[in-house]
Length: 147
Image (cartoon, rainbow, N blue to C red; front, side, top):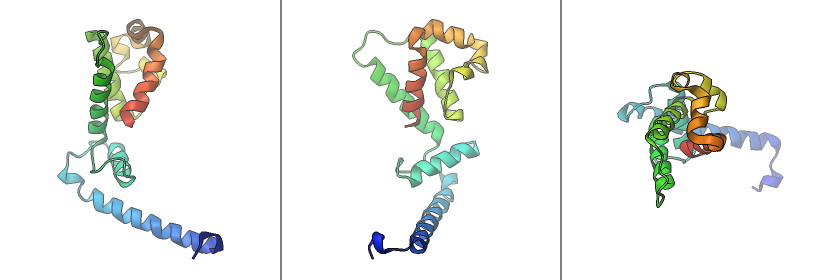
Protein backbone atom coordinates (compact mmCIF):
# COMPACT_ATOMS: atom_id res chain seq x y z
CA UNK A 1 0.00 0.00 0.00
CA UNK A 2 1.37 3.41 -0.96
CA UNK A 3 1.41 6.26 1.55
CA UNK A 4 -0.59 8.50 -0.78
CA UNK A 5 -3.49 6.02 -0.77
CA UNK A 6 -3.52 5.58 3.03
CA UNK A 7 -6.11 7.24 5.16
CA UNK A 8 -5.24 9.43 8.10
CA UNK A 9 -6.60 6.70 10.37
CA UNK A 10 -4.27 4.12 8.82
CA UNK A 11 -1.27 6.46 9.12
CA UNK A 12 -2.09 7.07 12.79
CA UNK A 13 -2.30 3.30 13.42
CA UNK A 14 1.10 2.78 11.79
CA UNK A 15 2.63 5.67 13.77
CA UNK A 16 1.15 4.25 16.99
CA UNK A 17 2.57 0.79 16.24
CA UNK A 18 6.02 2.26 15.55
CA UNK A 19 5.87 4.20 18.80
CA UNK A 20 5.00 1.00 20.68
CA UNK A 21 7.94 -0.82 19.11
CA UNK A 22 10.33 1.98 20.06
CA UNK A 23 8.89 2.11 23.58
CA UNK A 24 9.36 -1.65 23.98
CA UNK A 25 12.94 -1.26 22.77
CA UNK A 26 13.48 1.59 25.24
CA UNK A 27 12.07 -0.42 28.16
CA UNK A 28 14.26 -3.38 27.24
CA UNK A 29 17.31 -1.12 27.20
CA UNK A 30 16.40 0.41 30.57
CA UNK A 31 16.33 -3.06 32.09
CA UNK A 32 20.07 -3.27 31.34
CA UNK A 33 20.94 0.11 32.86
CA UNK A 34 22.06 -1.46 36.12
CA UNK A 35 24.60 -3.54 34.22
CA UNK A 36 26.48 -0.44 33.02
CA UNK A 37 27.68 2.59 34.94
CA UNK A 38 24.25 3.99 35.72
CA UNK A 39 23.77 7.78 35.45
CA UNK A 40 23.02 9.25 38.85
CA UNK A 41 20.24 11.55 37.73
CA UNK A 42 17.01 10.46 36.07
CA UNK A 43 17.30 13.14 33.39
CA UNK A 44 20.79 11.93 32.50
CA UNK A 45 19.45 8.38 32.28
CA UNK A 46 16.64 9.57 30.05
CA UNK A 47 19.01 11.42 27.71
CA UNK A 48 21.26 8.36 27.58
CA UNK A 49 18.27 6.23 26.67
CA UNK A 50 17.12 8.62 23.94
CA UNK A 51 20.62 8.75 22.46
CA UNK A 52 20.72 4.94 22.35
CA UNK A 53 17.22 4.44 20.91
CA UNK A 54 17.84 7.11 18.25
CA UNK A 55 21.09 5.40 17.27
CA UNK A 56 23.45 8.19 18.39
CA UNK A 57 25.23 5.74 20.70
CA UNK A 58 25.83 2.04 20.04
CA UNK A 59 25.32 1.13 23.67
CA UNK A 60 23.60 2.68 26.65
CA UNK A 61 26.20 5.17 27.84
CA UNK A 62 25.82 7.52 30.80
CA UNK A 63 25.48 11.07 29.46
CA UNK A 64 28.26 12.22 31.79
CA UNK A 65 30.64 9.77 30.10
CA UNK A 66 29.57 11.05 26.68
CA UNK A 67 30.28 14.65 27.70
CA UNK A 68 33.66 13.74 29.20
CA UNK A 69 34.68 11.78 26.09
CA UNK A 70 33.60 14.63 23.81
CA UNK A 71 35.45 17.13 26.02
CA UNK A 72 38.66 15.12 25.81
CA UNK A 73 38.36 14.91 22.02
CA UNK A 74 37.61 18.64 21.79
CA UNK A 75 40.66 19.53 23.93
CA UNK A 76 42.91 17.28 21.82
CA UNK A 77 41.58 18.81 18.62
CA UNK A 78 42.09 22.35 19.96
CA UNK A 79 45.65 21.59 21.04
CA UNK A 80 46.65 19.56 17.97
CA UNK A 81 49.63 21.17 16.26
CA UNK A 82 49.16 24.33 18.24
CA UNK A 83 51.58 26.12 20.48
CA UNK A 84 48.70 28.07 22.01
CA UNK A 85 47.43 25.47 24.45
CA UNK A 86 45.12 26.39 27.28
CA UNK A 87 46.67 27.72 30.48
CA UNK A 88 46.11 25.88 33.76
CA UNK A 89 43.52 28.50 34.81
CA UNK A 90 41.71 28.21 31.48
CA UNK A 91 41.76 24.43 31.67
CA UNK A 92 40.28 24.53 35.19
CA UNK A 93 37.46 26.71 33.90
CA UNK A 94 36.87 24.46 30.93
CA UNK A 95 36.49 21.53 33.33
CA UNK A 96 33.92 23.51 35.33
CA UNK A 97 32.01 24.16 32.12
CA UNK A 98 32.26 20.49 31.13
CA UNK A 99 30.86 19.37 34.46
CA UNK A 100 28.04 21.92 34.28
CA UNK A 101 27.05 20.78 30.79
CA UNK A 102 27.19 17.14 31.92
CA UNK A 103 24.62 17.84 34.63
CA UNK A 104 22.57 20.63 33.03
CA UNK A 105 22.94 19.86 29.29
CA UNK A 106 23.67 23.52 28.46
CA UNK A 107 25.62 26.53 29.69
CA UNK A 108 24.46 30.11 29.24
CA UNK A 109 26.42 33.22 30.24
CA UNK A 110 23.84 33.77 33.00
CA UNK A 111 24.92 30.47 34.59
CA UNK A 112 28.30 32.04 35.30
CA UNK A 113 26.67 34.07 38.08
CA UNK A 114 25.89 30.89 40.03
CA UNK A 115 27.77 28.05 41.70
CA UNK A 116 30.41 26.85 41.01
CA UNK A 117 31.38 29.70 38.70
CA UNK A 118 30.61 32.56 41.09
CA UNK A 119 33.13 31.34 43.64
CA UNK A 120 35.78 31.31 40.89
CA UNK A 121 35.13 34.90 39.80
CA UNK A 122 32.02 34.46 37.67
CA UNK A 123 31.51 35.95 34.25
CA UNK A 124 34.23 38.56 34.84
CA UNK A 125 36.87 35.90 35.45
CA UNK A 126 35.80 33.90 32.43
CA UNK A 127 36.00 37.02 30.27
CA UNK A 128 39.45 37.74 31.73
CA UNK A 129 40.60 34.23 30.83
CA UNK A 130 39.02 33.89 27.39
CA UNK A 131 38.48 37.49 26.28
CA UNK A 132 36.04 38.40 23.56
CA UNK A 133 35.93 34.76 22.43
CA UNK A 134 34.06 33.83 25.62
CA UNK A 135 30.54 33.63 24.11
CA UNK A 136 31.81 31.82 21.02
CA UNK A 137 33.59 29.33 23.30
CA UNK A 138 30.41 28.75 25.32
CA UNK A 139 28.41 28.12 22.13
CA UNK A 140 31.08 25.78 20.78
CA UNK A 141 31.23 23.75 23.99
CA UNK A 142 27.44 23.54 24.17
CA UNK A 143 27.44 22.00 20.71
CA UNK A 144 30.52 19.82 20.89
CA UNK A 145 30.08 18.24 24.30
CA UNK A 146 26.53 16.99 23.82
CA UNK A 147 27.04 15.78 20.24
